[in-house]
Image (tube, rainbow, N blue to C red; front, side, top):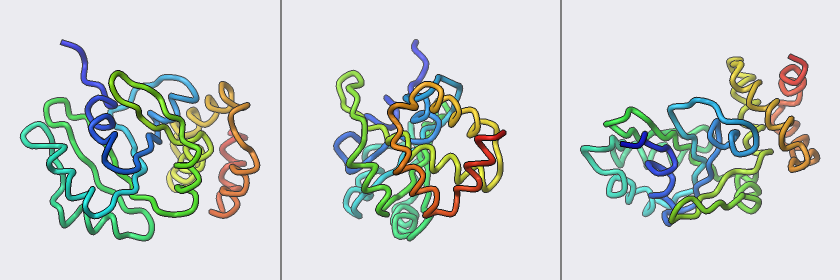
Length: 184
């Protein structure tokens, strides 16, 4: 029996249910190098109707999906909304980050669409992934973020719009953290 796959378990079922970008470590692997992870981070923009469909997409007993009240509450947060869905048999999970700011809109317009089996999935642009990895690095360190970002630069530097990256890091007051991360 093949190992469970994060894209098959979480991303493909969402292919027709709103804006969903693969970010985080799985996204960084698209631009960098493979590494082990037990979750997929998804930047999403779902309407309340699309959120209400999640429990019918991720059904019990195979999945744990938060109660509808939690989905709606987290979706309304102006900043840092978050919920996760867990694939019970494997313990793998998807972290959902509702995103409605101008940077997400830019990322959606610049997404990388990839055919994955019978579905098309969307990866966030490298700039988006880097900004969020810098944000998490600034909050708590984490060598995995440093490695991911450095490998993205090593392998995909030509694909990175440095003007966009620099402007967004500055807008979020993360330019100092980025400089520390690159120097480490």
